[in-house]
Length: 383
Image (cartoon, rainbow, N blue to C red):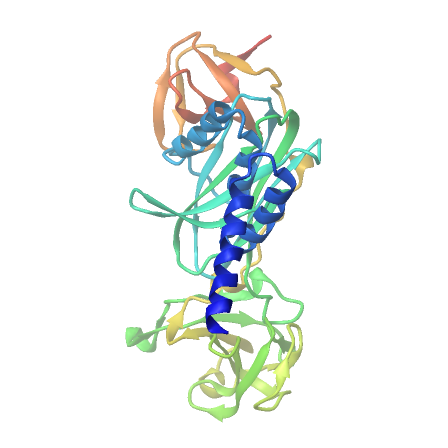
């Protein structure tokens, strides 16, 4: 019986190989691809490249443009927005280096006039001159979110499909991983930050202090379970919230009273207690000490700091021409601002390709292939 099972398995494997190698069996091959893809999980870029099996030169240029863009030196701060126009078969690639902190969630999105145009967004972790793919969109999705688990630099690479012919708005933003721990309060209520001196410099502050009226509700910033409640040590009345079975421990201290019991499961927004000044805070205004521990303490600010949202309506578009010419000698910048490093200069009457616009600053590519930012006052459109 075992011999027969082996023979059947071999026969099935041979049949499968025949299906794969059959040039005229497109329906069967497509079916196999669906099964194989479920196992190998190809990237959206790899799936898209299959559409060009009869035009490998064209897709090779598209892929080369992506590889070359990894070395671009542009750097922006978040939030960042850019308007522009994709032009078909020109192989534009938009690359931005951003600095992120653990506890932040990177958000990247492209809104185009046509929903049929596919965008490919990758987030690459930067380590010296090496780039590791950290996140990417799936096919037909034009936005992604990436939870940053290690502070450092990340490169966002956006590339439209070859035939894309549309106006666009690129949005790069971030949000905190958690909600805000004091009900009705925000960034302005934070009065003491991570690392500040305590006890005459004998120790440093391992958290943030959020000031609010005594009795203001303190809430769960995420779903989790209560690992401890009670009154002890410097923290006075306190609640410890566990984020997941093996996740981080979130520390709420100096509470006036506690509203949950140890072992309870809670949802984000549930009341855990109320702002007070118990423990070593009895001589200070009422506030919540909020800390995060992952073995050791980590800076909780990026996990809860609320950030600005972007609106396309706030971004102007002054140039629609594909090419520009410099009015005079012009400095090229690493980012959209005069405080960013100069990465080159252009002579008068040099022609550059316009990629997009960030209000006063133009995202351009020189004839030598260098990408940079140029102030809009230094260029004229070529009609």
